[in-house]
Image: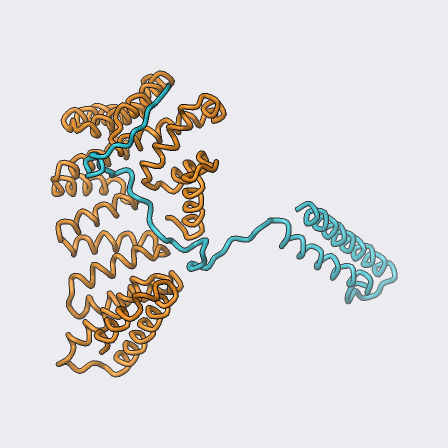
Length: 104
Length: 303
């Protein structure tokens, strides 16, 4: 978990650095009065690296994913809970009480 | 809802605890979470924890929940003195509590003193008229006295107030089934399916009721609901597979004289043979001794 968190933080920092570089580049272009078509190559590379790191962290950090198949073993309902709110006590089992002694 | 992983975990715990390994407290917590009725085991292991002062103090505030759980289990096993002791402990700790008052009335029920129990519940209801558990216990008293019609009446009134209570709808369906009022039971199961469409057991029960009522439209609907159950359980429910085979054979018998549309007949035939093959495969895997019996039954059901 810790590694995922650290990698996520690094990824976010790289992305914010790429954003800052792009803003600075645009400022530079405004001074030189040129068109802004796309950020420079190194910023693009930084963006791709940041994307990969953030995606890896987002999948690793939250932990185990839950299953959504209704027929997987974690989700498949095998039996319903016995209705303990409606249970009645005059069944045949009351003729065979187990021997329990309480010492408290 | 008890899922498959929870069931295997529960069985493992049960075997471990029965053979003297530790883990009694985890087992009791699991039983309480899944709301199962394992009264003898809960009583045995819960009382062993409560008898040991070290283990009891290790529980901390959960001791009182354990007392409640053991009290109810003791009432179910008819060890009324154990139940009385647990309730006395709880009364000392929480005097004047409604929850303990409910337990006392439950003890009166377990002793068979239905009149006093009914009075106790009415007095508890005067203080809080919207207590769900007390209404349900009154239904249970009528059920225990062998008056299912009164129980049905009380339960209907309760459901008018609390329409979202699944356990109550399930109980009402079972009461109707015990009186063979199948159409009303089918209505209850429809309510359950509407509120929880992912649970396959409601589809299965509804299909069973439709199959019991009979008639060709009901049989076709029953087949659809068996198919829905198979879809939701990934084919692991043998009862639904057998249900499809039975429905198909019953439909074929009823529609011998009529002309069926061709595409429905071919789909039905394919479904029937696939279900039969799945049943045989499962029997071969789990109970190969009975495979021949099952094969001969399925052959006699073939259209």
